[in-house]
Image (cartoon, one colour):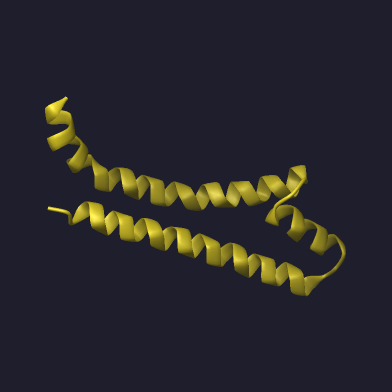
Length: 88
């Protein structure tokens, strides 16, 4: 266990964080798409309802907000990746 926590995990951590960084963008896309299909509450439902009501301003604003949130999540994971990779 000591070897795992002092050697293996620190060596694998940058790769793990990179995988999480890639998957968070895909997960965000799937969540919004699922909300569009299933309905209920959420930004996907809001975009779908705005599209059906031909409220293009709300649709464009919502798409921009989805992109901004994804960029913020990616930036947070990029910072975490740098901290983990260069923490020697």
